[in-house]
Length: 51
Image (cartoon, rainbow, N blue to C red; front, side, top):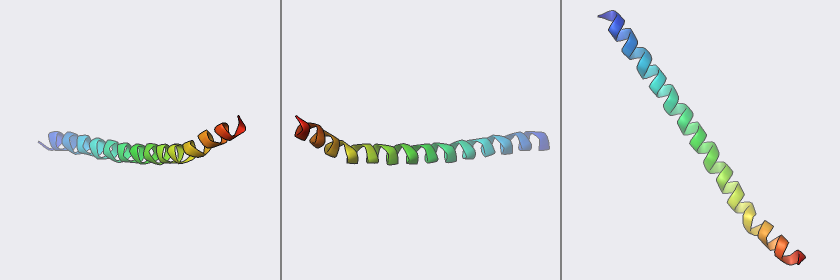
């Protein structure tokens, strides 16, 4: 019936929202990792030069 339909609709809504959040989190993590690895060689080089 319509109640079942509404329940399904809500479930799909949650699913799509979760997917969106997961994509955002993945994007943020990838950007963070990229900046970390970009800065890593410079930091290693700086520590080597100081010695």
